[in-house]
Image (tube, rainbow, N blue to C red; front, side):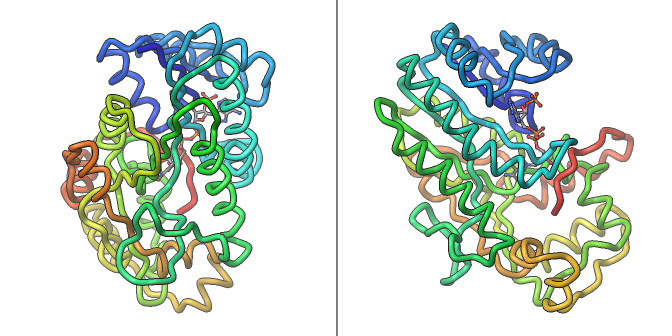
Length: 320
Ligand SMILES: NC(=O)c1ccc[n+]([C@@H]2O[C@H](COP(=O)([O-])OP(=O)(O)OC[C@H]3O[C@@H](n4cnc5c(N)ncnc54)[C@H](OP(=O)(O)O)[C@@H]3O)[C@@H](O)[C@H]2O)c1
């Protein structure tokens, strides 16, 4: 299959591109950096160097790739210039618009986009599913990201002339993520600056990067459209996974922080993550794609990730 991927050099892209090329797909991948273009070549992809906001050239690159499918894995959480949240909001709104417009002009038949499972309304009980509304009535600190996610999902599902698939990935962990042993989260845990907020009731649905990439390849093989949660089988409250990770990292046990103080000092987004988010069900993806995560529990995944003390690579900066 001919595939155009935007975001092939990001956390999931670096795992996904080699899977696609080794499966025999012809992959053209966008990057803004000449250095990363060389990495893409090593992964078997043909790089194009440019920016998703350069919509005239983007249309030409997608057309020249003769892509049947466009995969959108863009985020800007690792952005070094500017505010990563603001940049991610822009890439999810304007970046998505440009990619879809280029794909439509090139008569691409399918558009698959990265979303997140952890921006759903916390109202209600139990795990969220693909019908759960996004958290669009959130306080302003959370709402802006929820609106950008809604824009990406709406644009993908409504793209005329193409089928649209939204993959709501859980919390990525693995090398090169913020959960990397040298990443922002282990660093904060070691420093004792990542407390359990309130009751620690925020429920995380994690996904190992290798499972996220493998699920994406499965999705590609099925002519499915719609929204799918790609998460592991073991949703965990922050009061559960945080002490577990601290132990594996030989770090002090996390402290406790009252929710009101956390809201003032850590911000509303962290309170939402740590004490409010609900965790997500993967039942639909399992049912429709016959998919099983190789890491059904983050526990085994974290044990593997944190057992290798020799790793020096730094995780991308992504605020927890
Ligand atoms: N579900 C989750 O938990 C989740 C989801 C996403 C990210 N994260 C976390 O966020 C952190 C950073 O992730 P990341 O490394 O994937 O993010 P990143 O390095 O900021 O960027 C991701 C991808 O988007 C591309 N990109 C961004 N803006 C672009 C633009 N204007 N034009 C063209 N391409 C553009 C980048 O390409 P180039 O830089 O090569 O141009 C890269 O391939 C990691 O810790 C990751 O785990 C978590």
